Length: 505
Ligand code: 4AD
Ligand code: MG
Image (cartoon, rainbow, N blue to C red; front, side, top):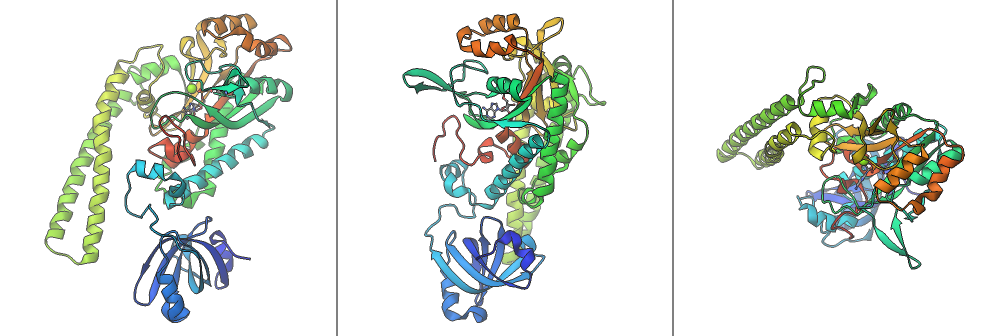
């Protein structure tokens, strides 16, 4: 039997055995401080020369980064340590000595890390992200299971397109072309007619050749579908669902979010109502023609631009001050501290300079936005900036949305679609709609979208036999992880990302 770091609080003052890996270590004459990890957490383990004797001390000295090791020792409460406990080691058993682990604590380029994703996953930051991802998954199942939804698995080999024909991965299915599912929705609709409320939770595929920070080629999607739901009810559900998942992460993953340096202020705002804005109004807001609680989207961007400029100036002043102190001559410890402050400030400058480059383009694009088009990534950023919580944008132009969305009564140029846009520049995380029930409108749309009617004959049966109003939506898991963890890029939100240009490891 061995114990786990996550349970250290139960064993305060007792002897335990832990099995894991060396994340990092440093030594003095009489002590070796090992940052040890076992999958459930990180803890400092101290190997003291007098405690363990010469031979074991020498063994501990040879422990390289990522060597696997078993420690037995006493647990002591120590609030200064990560996790609040420290292990004072009595015996050491080396399982495997690792040689030249390629990922050192120093900074690495992102491609270097992505090429070594199988090892990168062990680092503290990636560990924290994967724990948050796990909690998000738990929160999702928990929400649906406790609200009367039945989970279903939709097929991955499909004979037809759901979200348009441009980004399908084609594969060979016993000599016939088949496509990797873009969405499980159409099958979800069939199942909802049998079970009332269902949700899928599975892999979906998009062959878009876009190398952005929000696009994957393979991603897990959660797609609930509800019989007898209007789009208003759909929006209520999206709101309650997203709120539930975020609150569960805030409750269960405090230390992980802290490790990620995630300021949770914006996440905490989900307790309030999510604003609902029609597409038409959001265009006006985006162009700066309509204000939200006294805020003008364009003015806010101009203010952000000024803030970024001020930030660069302030950081540069601070760097100069630190450099002056270093030049004047200081002790090594102080110098290292100042140097690390300088590096941090340089990082902040880099971020602010990126904003200074981006914002003028965002403003241009927002001001000149053409009514009727789809929002680009920057448009979503500008639009959501004037709101405090995630925003539900509803009633979209028919021509930019999928064939199955229900037309707005009396206004066939709009459909009852809804997107949930996350704040802080994360943009669309949910897309959904009320579904068209009129078989004739569906037939017309299938033709307009240049889809093959024969492929959809089974789907149209749902409108032939006991057709009812129904709605649903899809949440991209990786997009949710990215937002909650505040990641620059979606690649860190998935264990092994598959995206344009990336198939290995
Ligand atoms: O908006 P989308 O394309 O909607 C559908 O697929 C519907 N069938 C959903 C439904 O009504 N049942 O995709 C839904 C969500 C997006 O909001 C986004 O979060 C995610 O899936 N998504 C992607 N995530 C990562 N990479 C991509 N390439 C994505 N494309 C969509
Ligand atoms: Mg969408």
